[in-house]
Length: 308
Image (cartoon, rainbow, N blue to C red; front, side, top):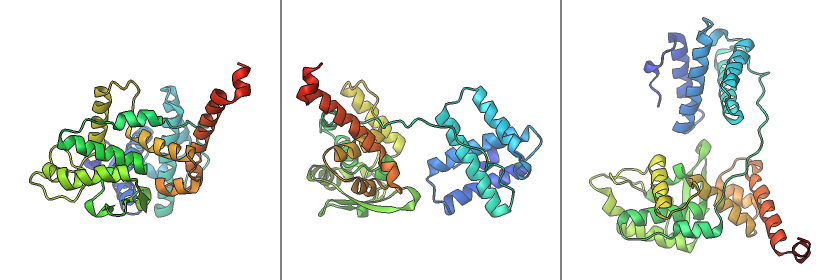
């Protein structure tokens, strides 16, 4: 978490940032990375406000517009600008709700964003990535993590937070706590079950060292695997396999959803497994699938092939 005492802000702004951080943790149940992102955006915003000899209690709409104008001068991307505006609007909503300070951000609108389709790996690319040489306990851990992420679509943070009680090795189910502190149960297949069982029963104990921990996936120090640690591992796997494209943990989640949809799974089931609150979030994968359909049509439809 951010150390409020080290921030160069007025005492009033420091105090409200401290309270806002507690609110995001205890009432909104945001993840640490999300909280830090929100707070960094608000801290920079309040630093700009202080240049006008103001604090959070007397901000006006023109102050917000001036701040956004400054960001635009720095050629900030629309996606980044949109994120900062959301953070500002949420902050002013909080001030209005708990301190009855007029919400001056109501008329501030978000820039129009072009929907970007998620990057996915083909089935062949997934098979190549997951085909690991298994020699050490770390190899079996990496194999189990990759298989689980592709088999369930879990976020990397969710996988890293799994404990032994969350895995049902007999019935091939995993229980996880996702965004908004929401619990969901996701099934996985026999191949994933096979490597999970080997890792947990034969190799996990070797990674524990002197620590008592219930976390399933452990780093080389015997502690809980982190998101950053797994990204580092994935990058090294890609280097060893000479995979040119940048592969991220989230691409496994996107690939899981896209491959399910392409093979006939219904959107509602995918929504539940991914833990999306709204079906509209899951519907982005239908756009991807339409692209696949078009590609297959162009490759295999005789009339299209004959007219090329």
